[in-house]
Length: 335
Image (cartoon, rainbow, N blue to C red; front, side, top):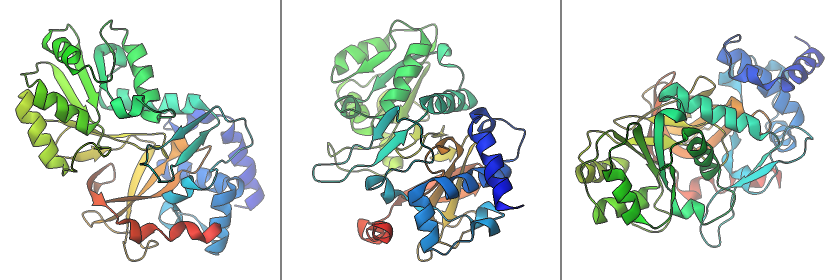
């Protein structure tokens, strides 16, 4: 296929975004269309590919696509079109750290992604009473997680659905009340631990979902240890987890055992920690690369700082994080 026809076809799809969520094309076909679009229109990604001497017309498999180091979101505007910016999502970061910025030119794609994703793994938000315990996120501007939860809370249409900042006692009382709907308690890790320590109780018909992050409030814990504490405090068999980040517009979910599943428009690929252009097989631990087709207006091919392994084509397990020293040089390439 000639480059001009690829670009022409890409712009057709560029104006009709729902195709990234539909099943008319295979994941690989969609990913390759998005790659060619972004390789020509996302300037930082284009420059990165040029430095790698990538012949974009020779890319015929997702295994051959170079992934943009996630650090670039801290120093570059990662955008693939000229449309006005509707929203800028920012990472939390700590004092003195640069934060990632994700410039969003079409919020409707993010909304479509998280609503479809939630329904794919759970049900419609209307089926839940949704309680969000996200103090560190609510206390700053630009959280994509708060944006998602706010919309899900609105869609739940339950009078007790809402955000909770530091009012743990009120939250505990609501959790103790029986509801005709299943309850989803979604919270940042340290706040859930505070709730577990101060107001332990047997929860019935409740899903507890942690989003990770101690945010400097507590000593870091491995996920299995965190889940054991929460399960004991709330008398639950399993703790659910949400995997997302500022730089992505899709989420993966884990319902048990720390195994995350991705929605049909998202895929995890594992790279070798010593050679980022070598792709590993299932069950081999390495760096997590993510293809997120919902990122069509920024960059869908992100090399994260997370370590993990894939179980199969649709599931993966987190194993930890790269040391900062391992990734600090990647962003110097296109200063």
